[in-house]
Length: 294
Image 1 (spheres, rainbow, N blue to C red):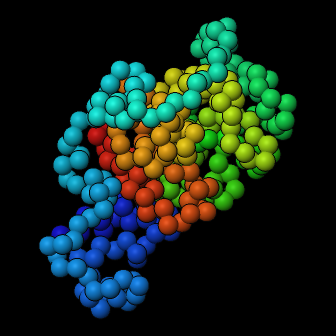
Image 2 (cartoon, one colour):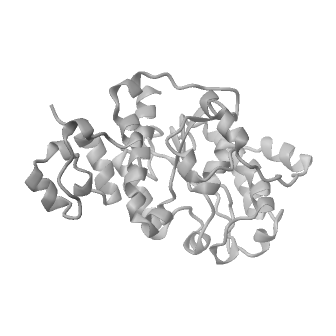
Image 3 (cartoon, rainbow, N blue to C red):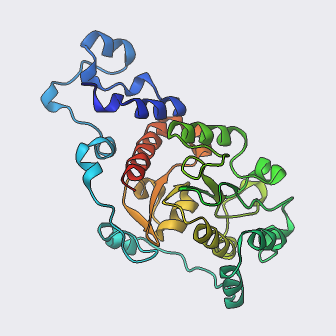
């Protein structure tokens, strides 16, 4: 029987992220093979002293598939995380005009896109080349939420392009998903929290996030995905309601209005910090396990 970490589906995710031999489990190797693969690591510890990293153990434990997905009240973290989320410091969110909120809630797809393209509610509207609304299947089973457009996204009008987009496409392909297609089970919908590029790719400011969030919420309502994949700190915080860092948000149970949320790192971050690709792999495994139960 193959080791659970050598499951073909998980190997596909590893290959897509560029994480390969370093993630062969130690107990599948003899001492000579281990020394050859990881020369900087000393002799393997006795079997009784070994254990998998916690995040990987949760993602691969057989019992994890049998656990029901906890769905608390709309937009509220799962019970086990409510105390941690409440304890995290939260920035005061700028107010958004009630008229804007009501107007956005009533828009269908095409009017919502036209509204986004014409929006000048914050200063980013006058700095962009074009708004980046989203791409993919309008009834996708999985919706990917990123942070904000970069220079290439601003030029092309599509989220996640360039090197980060290629890595995202590889990650999705490893899960049997794609950016474009006619099947809502295999084609995702991709959108950003922020629809216009912040100058110099700086972090989005609170008022910019506040003005864009109603648009993202309406997109989620229209797509009605079975799973939300939040990539990057601002996407994760927007969908979990927590201001904790992303390292504390991932591999935990979150819920957005009855829809499970999986938090992971942004592909652009993974390109700069490849040592965290293994953690992103564990997040993909968690997303696949949740999809299997839905």
